Image (cartoon, rainbow, N blue to C red; front, side):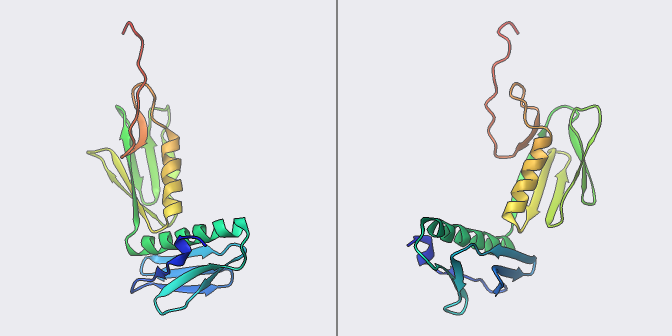
Length: 180
């Protein structure tokens, strides 16, 4: 048995977890997140205020799915209670961002500005003094994907470090020419 599955998932006050067909719906003040139940996995509500993730058979794939569903459900619960935050730094002379509603316009050293439409469920804040983007969301997967897509518009250069990087990312810069 999975070590994670031995423990019940405690549902905090203010959240509701319900089984809807083949998925779990986690409802809170910030919205609703869904976790799909994979084959061979089920959710049981044994005590009030807790959920147990159980498997129906002992196949290897089902055992691995059990831990996956446990973690996805705890991520959804944590997202709706505290939320997730990712910070991106824009490094480079003349590199900047402009926020208009849910559209992000970035000047990244190209001959044209780059437009990025932020999906619903992710809030963006821009600090022009620090040249830092702050993304917040309740969905951990969505915020990670959006942050990766924004970073992918201009990844950090390996020589000068110019580009978009995560705030906690450490870059190992290459040495330039020996004569310079």
